[in-house]
Length: 336
Image 1 (cartoon, rainbow, N blue to C red):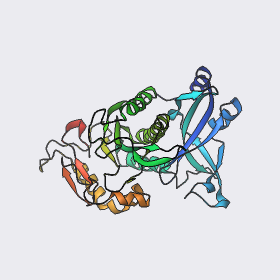
Image 2: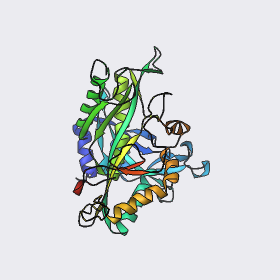
Image 3: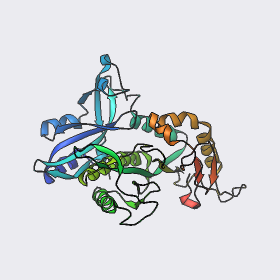
Image 4: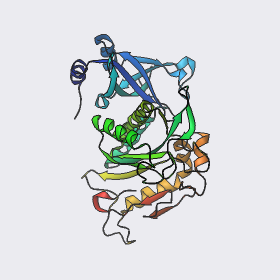
């Protein structure tokens, strides 16, 4: 459903929204925001794409003489957070970043994704779906409220309480996500001590990426409520598995058919030529996108043998260890 400015104004009044977060993502994938009071005057400014911020203060954005930047909100990302207080509720809008000349900013990850989707449509495809499987660690905090490297439990893969001491934290995260419209599919302890995973249903890739950013915010907020620090850092502790995020990807043509599926595949994989081309592209460009998808020094501490992280450019059917795999399900569920 497409939201309108009138829908948002009505929601603000009915839910007593007093503050509005204008959120965007920097080039390292970190969610940023400018918070404004949800007054009529400020709301009109936001809805007319006139909300400004200093882009030169965001790492990797622009130089000081190019600092004036604008936030264009996507009204369909309107979210009222299910936490607040005596000062009223807080809501948020995810925004695209534009230059002072009214052009999409080349360093805006969301804008670049939209540009890629436009190209996808030009070459004959209708939609691209993404189903994320994000992992994270929960660490204890010290008496000053600072995170430590002491994990919250000694559990392992799929363990139950009392070995898994974070099951109530995960449950509250899932409840909050559900309140916010997420369809959570699974929640469990991961392989490493203190490591967890919560999976939610796939969506078109733009919506899915927006959901990932909101998901991280919810996880960190609820973890702190429980006296824990949540981190999505790739390798926070030496000697145990790091955290990654499998991405289930599927492509659909203009007729709504799964472009990756071909029951007549002579290779016996039931994959289409489009799927093989897509897979080949992932292999060919692996070095390049690895640099973007692993944006910190810590990212590369994860990419070492022995901890389930991919260290070779390879693919396989079913096998879970390579960089790229083809899950067993086929038909409309065919994905990489």
